[in-house]
Length: 135
Image (cartoon, rainbow, N blue to C red; front, top):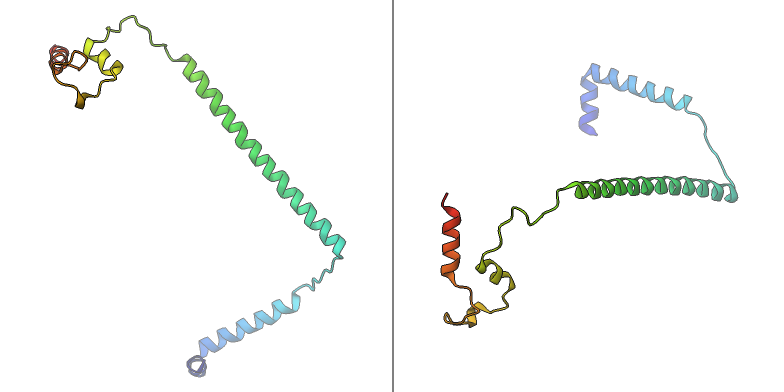
């Protein structure tokens, strides 16, 4: 505060500004309404109950809105999925032998020998892939 006081002693614009601020503070303080409300315990309990009720109703409305949005999204997604064309077997080539055995086989590839008839033959895979890659 000493530096502040020393500055005020030498600076007339700052002294004038401080004087104006103090005058404004006194003016505001003089016009401040005296609001001192004292409520009984019963009135305070009613007030708290009303505030809690308003908050609960607002929360219920918010949850209801979110539920309506979720239901709308669910209905829209269901309708969208129902309008998609269904996959049919027409125009779809039958799977190659190696493709069927790759998905249907329960063979542990690491434990089977290359002479086993249930193992997937890599030559079949390569032949099929090379045939599909050429135009």
